Amino acid sequence: MIYAGIILIFLYGSVLLVLAIGNWRLKRSVSERPLPTQGFSIVVPFRNEADNLPALLRSISEIDYPNHKFELILVNDQSEDDSVQLISQSLANSPISWKVIENVRKSNSPKKDAITAAVEISAYQWIATTDADCLLPANWLLRFNTLIHKHGPKMVCGPVGIPESEDMVKAFQKFETLSLQGVTKGSFGWKRPLLCNGANLAFSKEVFRELGGYTENNHIASGDDLFLMHKIRSQYANSVVFNNDPTCVVMTMAVKNWDELIAQRIRWASKTSKVGSILLTTIGIIVTLMNLWMIAGLFYFMIWKWDGVAVYLIIYMIKFFMDQVFIEEQVKDAPEKVNLELFFFAYLLYPFITTYIAFRSLFGGYTWKGREFKR
Image (cartoon, rainbow, N blue to C red; front, side, top):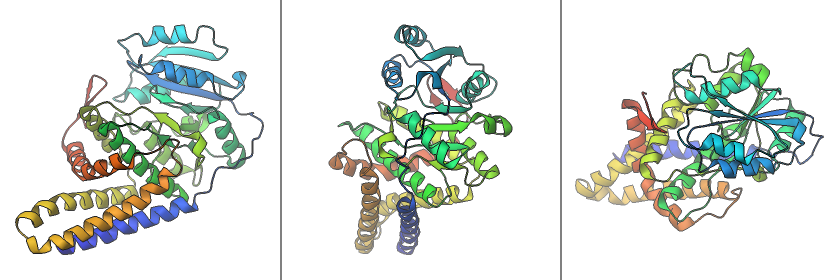
């Protein structure tokens, strides 16, 4: 047991070190501001989002970009609340070009169907996606325009954050979001992107059509962002770039309770295991085994092997220190303050929750927005 812990902490530390170096290698997004020449079709799929849509629409109305250079396409995925009426009321006098369309279900993935339907009627060559529970920064499209102008990519990925909260469920999500952001930025720093988030994403409509959109993975309910990114990368090396600008973080609302959080994380885990990236799978296995060892070791050394408790605590403290340093690097770019006391308690829960989610994602489905999905 002790030898397994030593091996795992070495592997885990090596992963964090490589990702930390990748974060350091990732350059800040250029500060230049070319003319806003690129047109964007902003796509927002939604289902029963009446509580969140007003804030999103307000942030869209405040985007610093010429109104004639972007449009808003909202895709209604069988909402049962007042979302559609609310949109009509909110945008009735807006100078922004907008439309609401109904989702056309063709696969097991409502969101992929929604984005595909929007792409088919979009007016511009670049598609920018976000979620209905998000707040967009004013310079969102300007930064996309800058990176497209400078690098000529096929896809641009951006950072996502969660507002600070005194609630433990939300504090846990903020901790995990910063961790995933570190993995995302670290992998981009090595030009081997592993993760991205559809809440802050833009891609070329031309390449989407050329590669067949979400064909080959429509049977998987989630993963519109991840599958498309890896598909584009496989055909066009170095064609996916990251918007490493802390002023361009898209803020997304945290889920409200543990049941919703676990369902959401199972949904995420169900897609990452299907991407086919050996590197992403390897990192996931190392992290899962490390967390599993932390849990198993706690009971093993406390009950059967008291003389190994000191070694267990040393390994635990080494992991805690490495995680703290890694997270603090991400906190520097966070748009809001972080409650480090809540972070500590979230850290204690992390191995238990992530291990449970990992096993649940292997053996069962999940419920999301009132629908049942199989693995």
